[in-house]
Every structure is written in structure tokens, then in C-alpha cells.
Length: 140
Image (tube, rainbow, N blue to C red; front, side, top):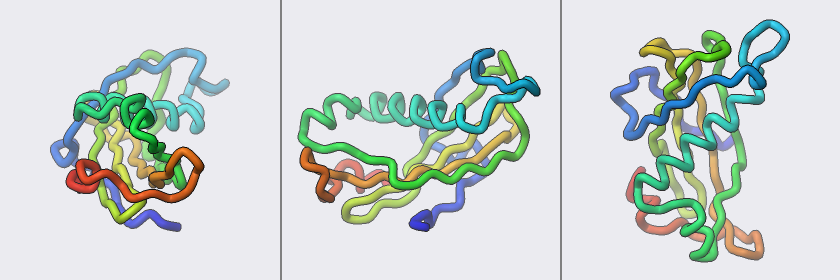
């Protein structure tokens, strides 16, 4: 496992937050958000965070790089349910020459429901490892 970051459970430790509403289609027969639905929540928040930083994902790809997800760790603390407004807090957690980690905190009305970490690898257009851009490593 590459993950070295333990996500904080304090919202004030995060640089960005993104809100979304749980859709009915994301819930299971018990009325709880299915564990697989969390990954799109993380991705949506990550894409919006990069956009706010002035580096929308399509512009980063146009520079000839992509950022493959190598690992995901999620800790489910309390379930999410239909129609709740979820806040996904995002921060850069760590970076090396070609990889970086993003920490996430998922809350509902300030209550911590989940933490997560994604590990990403920078690759060129041929899929070979590449050095992270300076602006990205500076966030760590």
C-alpha cells in the first residue's frame, strides 16, 4: 500500500469543499448510499478543486499528462442516505516526484461520515510515469 496520509477529521484542515446531494439511484435496498457511490463523490470534488485552483482537468490533459488513480482508501464511519446534502472536503496530502495523495473528509451538517485518500500517478500520453508539475508538488 502506498498511502502514507491519515485523513484529518477536522473540516478546518481542508483547503476546499464541494457540496452535492445524494441521489436515490445511489442508495441500496437499505436506503443507504452504496459503498461504490463514494468514488464518484471523491472524483467530482477533486475535479472541482482543480478547477478552482486554475488547473481544470482538461487543461492538464492538454499539457500532455494524466493523473491515474493508483489506490483508494475509504473509511466508512456513518452511512449517507438519500437526499442528504454532503460536503466533500479536499486537500493535498503528500507528493513525491511522480505521485500525490489527496485527503478527503465527507460530512453532513458538520458530522463526519467518512474519510478517504486517493493516490494518483502522473503519466505521459504513452502511459509512462512522468514528473509532477511544480504547481502540484507545491500544494503538498
